[in-house]
Length: 134
Image (cartoon, rainbow, N blue to C red; front, side, top):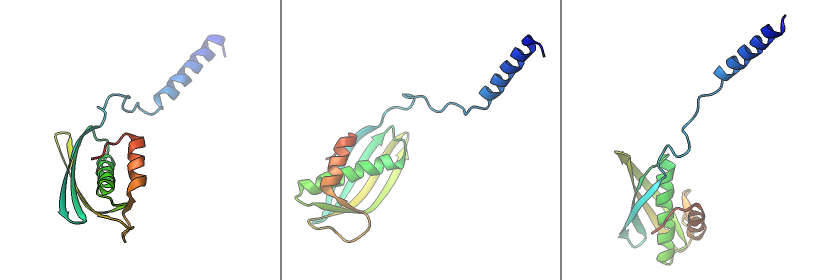
């Protein structure tokens, strides 16, 4: 094999490897950053609260769920309660605007159920993650 031919084979090998690489994903900054567009609260009963949160630039439904969870945790603290329990969340998206309609119970003691929140812990985590609360 001549020197020129081995160089050509090496170049062909590099081109083959380059063709097998994964395609580029979204570039940083290509998706607008999440925008927390507000929280509306409505007291349904002494310990039952409805939170309506709105966002744009949502990557996943989890972003919206986290926003509602943060609102519920802070609201529980404002009302002098230490805990909240998730009851339900309905999510809608239209034209890039996401809205969650969530209901939580709030209580002074740890409620029964699987989806409970320690309000102080959750509110602190929200602050660390830059998620606004009520």
